[in-house]
Image (cartoon, rainbow, N blue to C red):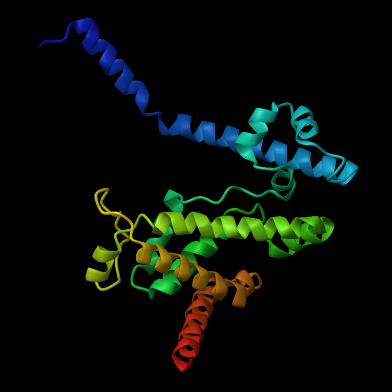
Length: 237
């Protein structure tokens, strides 16, 4: 069967539209960041003026010039908007950062993944400023605990897609390959994944999430050292 010239032209046009240019993608990302910042700054200002109870999602949306629906495209709750919390996610940048740890002990590697997810879900590069915000709104403490659990779950969900048999066969080093669709996730693998992420979380808590460590090489050393300490304790008991 041959396609007419109009059909061919239409298909080509659709194919050309399907992939946005880098410039278009960059512009869209900048717009999203501007909208995100606008909502966050508006939510923070209203919370400071009227308190958390005196500020609603509808108030924030109206003041920011958006709809409540748009608000929820950017933030899950008004608390997240005030604090500047982003939904934890597995990103291309995260996966790229993991390549530097492909030859590390698995717990060390997963600790780095969890730290990356946590760090990039906050709007604060400076931990001192973050602490100031928590002191300003102490009611956020519970929300942060929930947020950390969400960060853990995002990582668990990602690791549950990994082909651990292939990883083990490769000497437990190298890239994390996606499990074939016809290979079901076993209960044992799921339990091990959750336990490993919990260990990684314990390492970060022991290090206070590296909040006072500016040098990344020192962060690396501290994570390795803490994992060794945990391993030694487990062997002793």
